[in-house]
Length: 492
Image (tube, rainbow, N blue to C red; front, side):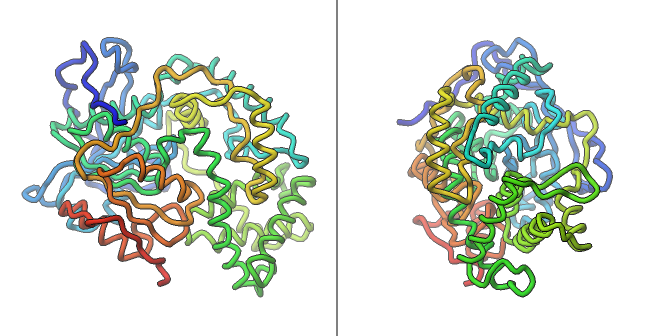
């Protein structure tokens, strides 16, 4: 069944005020942006169904089309997350998009509601590392500590200074904000390029506002039918399909890394190392910190997202082995500095902002199971079937203790113009192939699918002329392949 297009809630003003373009927020030290990029803000209702109530401020950015006479409209950009800011995306995208696209569109970035410079929210969390966000079981498989941490985290969010705002940080409301941006820009339609979580956001927008959707590219796709507890469960299959790429790299360079000469030997060595530091974490010299099994697995998950990060990933394994053996080298010190380097701090943005938004969206978009025993059973089964992910994808999250969502998840619709391009890598550990197929099914005749025989989370600009040509032709000229298609790997 499809989803009816959304009409403005009763009482919505005829149109949002115009965005006044000016300077952008100060960049963190060392960061750069395109000098053409300008920024502005837009007031949106906290609750779109009560537009006369409290408001949030949305930070928006723009780089105008290079040749105004060739301009088609605007291209909204979202990098995913959930919880990542997009204010700097016009500057970043201007470095990778071809002139045929840059001539045609104003590039529009924005920090989604609650993120970065858009009325940022907080849960008051002090430890915001991914190793705590990703619930890896204890060395013996127990999830008791995960249950306690999930309960505590949910309680802290519910008691935080943002407690009255968090329930309104949802994908549906972010999509409604996007449409208010469209109106403020004076555009009848918007085009869109969304990656990762941004694919779900784009699909929700296209379902709520099909008449205002122009050309849409969704890359690394979330299955709309699985948000979010079902989606995280797919990570085990994703890890199983992607990890062999790293194992092959390590085996090919065994003279340097010494993890084995075959992918099977490397995999066995990695699992042995992870299990070893589950029981006895590897201390980091000169600090009170250590690399735990959960941290090693989290770093592995993160670095598997890009092929160009595979050498660093295998170096991380080697460094961890040296730390566990008590034989770190100077090269290991450089690796540690690289992986633990703190990202730039943005003034006025809480340290836990991305984590708070991640939780608000994943817990507030749709309900999760609340029975602890459900997670205990599912984690044990997942752990047995998929040693590489150690049961984490099926484990308990703070969402089990979260307040019920304010509205049902938006049904993603296959009704509308044929104007959506789906890009999906075969061996994507973050949004696995199965998840991409779920998006393909949901979009039906509206979409064309380009499956890529490649690993990693990103398809465009990764070396496949097949992918890049389809992407560029669609955005520049509106040309889509007649049928779904598949691109060979970059190496082929």
